[in-house]
Image 1 (cartoon, rainbow, N blue to C red):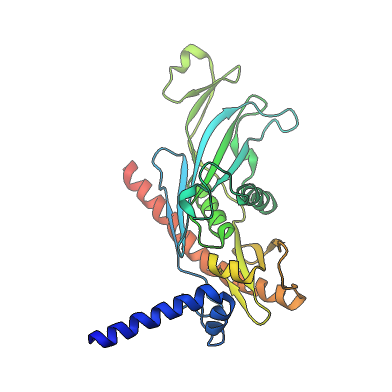
Image 2: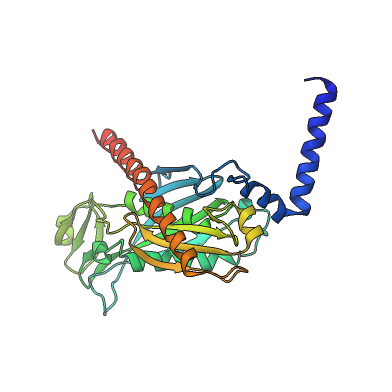
Length: 306
C-alpha cells in the first residue's frame, strides 16, 4: 500500500467512525439492509460462546462464560445452615449479581449499577421457574442442618445480553457444584469427614456428591427493530434499538418466562413468536456447548482423583 492509499484508508475509517457516533441508528441500518450486523454476524446468529467449568479452585463450583465480549464468572461457596421450620429438609441458594467498574465505562466506582438487582432477581426467578435445583438436594440432616449455597456472579466485561451470559454461567457453576463429604452428630452438628467421629457420637456420614439437576434454564435476548430482530445484541445494538425481548426456556425449548422492559417498539404476537423460534434454535446450540463443557470438567476431575 502506498502512502497515499494508506492516508485514504485512514480517512475513510475516521469518516466511518464519525458516522457511527453521530448517526448510530442509520449506521446500524446500513448493515441490516445488507443482512449482516456491524460485527459481521448474519442477522439471526448469536455470538460465539465459550464455557469453562471449574475456573475457581477455591469454590465448590464455578464457571466462566464468554458470549462474544460479554464475560461472566460464577462461583458457589457452601455454608451450613439450620433449615426453616416450614421447609425442614431444604437448603437455600442465595444469588448475587455484581457489576464492578472494570466491566463497563458506564459503571461508576463505588456505586451499584441499577442492573445488579434486576439481573439478580431474574436469575433467582429462572432457577425457581425451571426447578433446576431441587432444594432438598442441599439437605444434610432434616430439621437440623442443610447447605446454604452462595452463588456470586461477576460481570467482567459488559457488552450486551447480560442475563443470557449470567444465567449460562450460573447453570454451569451449579453443574460443577460438588457437595463435600461430612459427618453429622446426633444433635445436628456438621463436621468435616476427616474428624474423629467417635468422640461426637456420629449420627451418619454424608458422602460427597454432585447435585442432581433438573431442566437447565437459558435466556436469549433479542433487540427489536421495526423490520428486524437481532438475537444476542451487543451493548451498542441494545443502546441504539432500546427495545429488547428476553425469552427464558430450557434447552428443549420449553418456555418459562418472557421479559420486555419497555422500549420504543411494540411487541406484536408475530414478533414474540419469532423471538421464541430463535430461542428454540439457540437452545440446541447451547445444549451441545454446555454438555461438552461439563463432560470435559468431569473428565479432568476423574484424572485428578486417579
